Amino acid sequence: MSRKYYIETTHTGRKQWVLPLKRSHSHSHHHHHHSHHHGTEKEYYKVACGEWERLVEKEQELEKSNRALVLERDTLKVALANSQGDTHQYKTVVVPQLQEQLAILRSENHSLRRYIDDVGDRSSKYYQEVERLEGKVKKFECLTGELREENADLKARVKALSKQLEQSLTRRVADLKKELDEEKGHCNSLHTKWKELRDRYTDTLNVLDARTRKMEAYEDILIRRGII
Figure 1 (spheres, helix red, strand yellow):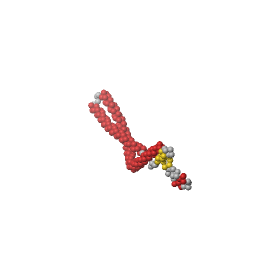
Figure 2 (cartoon, one colour):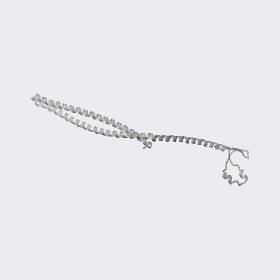
Figure 3 (cartoon, helix red, strand yellow):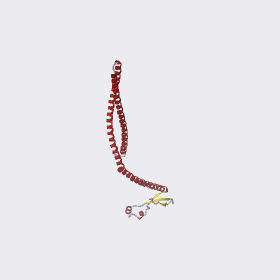
Figure 4 (tube, helix red, strand yellow):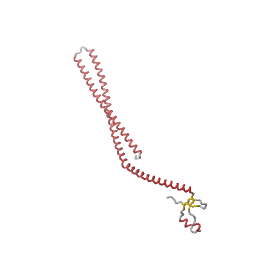
């Protein structure tokens, strides 16, 4: 609250502003036995007009600053209350939901890893079987070539053999060729199955990688917010 100032005329006729003073009770009591002229002493400060204006301006600035500080304090109180509400909501609702999702992702990740391990074992077995069949096919191809060479050599060397013997050799070659074709078909079928397993294995790895990145993102969020 602004103080009251008064105008006083000095003995020289110059006007000046004065600020009344309020003495304490103890001071008045202590000096009650003094002479009368001490009790009638003027209780004010003499202040020049320019100084008074500066004092008034300073007091107005202080009041303005005080009002701004009060407004800022009230605003901060409201912001603090809102922040505490948001924090409570986050801790009681958001964090449990994130933790539940994280637990689900970890369980799915574990299941996918076991599935990948199983698929990898089966894929390895099929690959070994394909290699074994490819080796067998190569042996049959070599054998077929040898038989054809043998057949040609026999034809050249035993032109006098009977037609029945020639047919027997032809049937033998045909049977071997048929068996070879069957083995090739079986090998191709196994190779196709192996490719399918390989593609499924690759797709599973991609899903696992995506889920792992998602889980790491949730973990980063929880770490940044100081939850874990």
